[in-house]
Amino acid sequence: MRFALSVVAAVILASALPAQNTLPAPGAQNAIRAIRTVVSDSEDGPAVSGEGFRSGEQVFFSFQVENYKTGPTGKVQLTGHIQAFDPKGVPVSPPDEVVIGTTMSEEDKAWKPKLRSQIQLPSIAPAGTYAIKYDVTDLQTKQTASGEVTFRLGGRSVATADTLTIRGLGLYRTQDEETPLRIAAYRPGDILWVRFDVVGFKHGEQNSVDVAYDVAVVTGDGKPLFAQELAAVEKSQAFYPQPWVPGEFNLTLQSNMSTGPYTLIITAHDGMDSDKTVVAKAQFKVE
Image 1: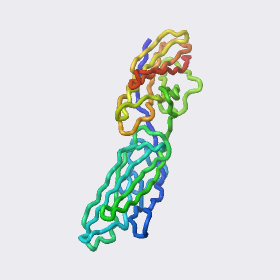
Image 2 (image 1 turned 135 degrees about the vertical axis):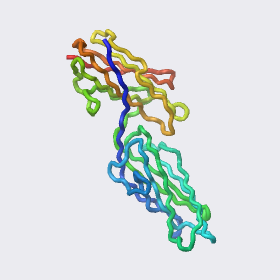
Image 3 (image 1 turned 45 degrees about the vertical axis):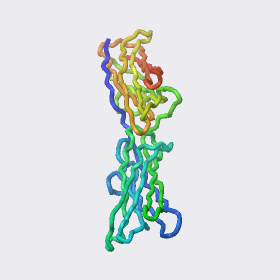
Image 4 (image 1 turned 180 degrees about the vertical axis):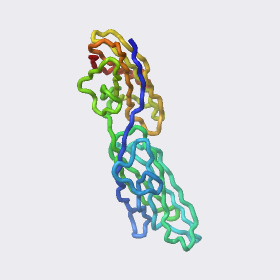
């Protein structure tokens, strides 16, 4: 008896909240200030409100500067830094340094420089409140202003674990179903969809991961029917440490499959932890 198996990618949705007010630099009234912060989904676009972002998308952030010094020849020298952080304070991207060095004419004295940054959101990231921290320094006066804005990343989160763990193993009738079947019952010829997440794996250098899983099916009395080792493998590295590895695939039940109970067995492997393994099982029946 044979099954067909295919692996598909998980989709994570994200949402965003409007940016908070900026924090002016302390000191005298004419101290350098960072103003007019905007979190947008396009360069110089309007501020995002509601569900404006998805994981894997880009966030466009900008702010303007006032009370900077203009040198005797109109010289302006500013350096800014911008970086985004997840709800636990982990950086999601490297810090971005923005430099403005120009010479202004007398007609430009009301000009307020704008510092921009384009932030790549991780393809897999937990829901929650994300922060963008920023600063700007006037190299001529050595004054610095800094602040922080937040946006909300929606979607879902998967609880972490101290050891390799399979969470949320569920069986579905279709790929688009959000809730697993309470009673996983199928007919011969049906497609059985499976979703789960692997957490608690180790990260190597440069946040590399090496997670794989095997798939097997046995009958109610333990007779092996199907097995595929390394049905999917996640080997990658990134600036942001991937918090979980999603698993999703389907099994096509043959039209002549015998009725009765069956057990689906998932065995996950962590190649970064001496090939540590963990097993999760789910019951289903063919009627």
